[in-house]
Length: 197
Image 1 (spheres, helix red, strand yellow):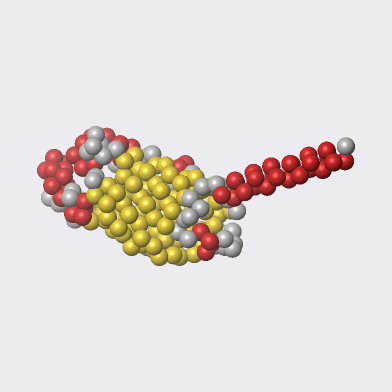
Image 2 (cartoon, rainbow, N blue to C red):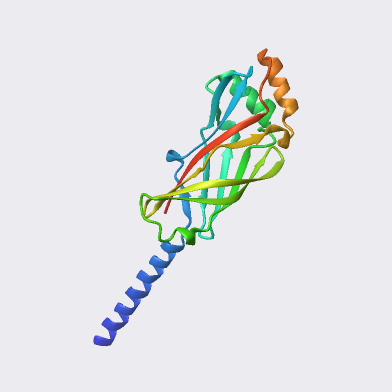
């Protein structure tokens, strides 16, 4: 009986250890309800507008790789007709359903980061969008919100040049349809990404 109890005890320890190890190795999942990706545009040289995406998903794995998918059809510019033009003319969602944001963070550098503190890191993000994949050197702010929650935001302002993604012709079509004098081809991009484990 003693030997049987010992075997049960050993099995229980093994199972508990396995569960703990699995949890420790689990990916950090994007908390989409507490995350946001948006960009700003300027028209007629003086009118700024903010646009956002309603649907994003992704994860941060234990190697520190951020993988975010942006549903381009979920664009929200606060004007329905403009949403449709963005989907059809600029994003061409029938051909490019998603944009992909990829980057690397060395999580081991943040293992001992105290809850409530932030650190700035330098890394390279790639944005795969409308058939083009461009690398962007960025500074990110990594904030530890809880033992099982981190938030990643840009440290400073990020800019995306539409010309890099071959979108100047699409922007010109939008400008004509909207009857505008200008639409800036360089846009600002912002995000906050919350990951939970």
